[in-house]
Image (tube, rainbow over all chains, first blue to last red; front, side, top):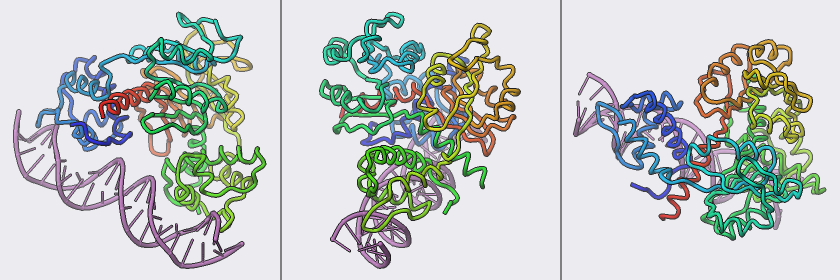
Length: 211
Length: 211
DNA sequence: TCCTGTGAATTAGTTCACAGCG
DNA sequence: CGCTGTGAACTAATTCACAGGA
């Protein structure tokens, strides 16, 4: 039911399936086949069934999957039956966009604190959030019961900040900093690196046009 | 030398290697081993050598790689020997953060236009960029010789906008819209989906703590 | 019949291990 | 020596293909 190691790619697809199931649910569709779900998610029906099979059998042969039931199962699998408390490390423009992005809240992630090192930014408000001094990071992490940290800083200070997060027990980090972070076993870091996405597109432009 | 199909994961690592080579170069280090580069990039020396081997042999046995020379070769491979013209589709907060993010310019990507559909936003300026009406999209794409489009809209209008981009010959798209886009063969779409990153972290939190 | 669930087959990606060159 | 370059071995991920239940 909960096997040793599920591939990251599988987990990401589950999150996508959930999104599309919610869409189908809103449209009042109460049943869906692996094929329909696959088409929506840009994959194959076998992939959908295999992904789900790691966690159990949720479908009815000849019929497909019950949309709200499967959605609920995926929410459980993904751990989305509770809300998560998120801290933003860094208060630049990107952090501001993330802080005020209502989509996170809608999906169960609440930004509960923002910190920065810049005295000019500290004290300013973004909606109901006040930018706090990063020197108080440890106190904030404890007081706010933070589950997830989003790192939105330049590369240089990133590792030092991660060390402090880890020391306080944070085990889930989403980093926009363009550096490879060193973390101990048991700490999960996901990277979003926009420059690398663009460079990958650049590679494709060069090589597809020359093909 | 330029083999048929290089894995996306390989291309992304090449982009990372380039970043670290530039770092080494700045520090005046003129030679680097696959092992040192691997350590910095969070991978293995065999992986580094294999990744590079798809494109040729750039190292010296017993010595390693010449830092500036390998960096230059990677820039060629990735197509970063020229600059790219980027359009932002959508003028929300995230787009604003991207538009004014100097990191893109530093890596060869120039934001040359921003469009939006909202009359309140149209005409406003972000630095030197003026937000234009999305109805003029086709004209702008032609006038500005756009290479890459970054889609920063809600999910609903995304597919329609992509269709228009594709019709005008855009073949490289970076999408922040939380939907799967349908594009013809030859058009390359990369996705950045922040909600899915967070949900993947959520999965890890749930399953590691229960292990 | 239709569509799931799943072993088996296949393909893709990574790591090993060593020959060979500087 | 030391470290690259690369087939071969291995591991991971995807796809096939079909038995079997609704």
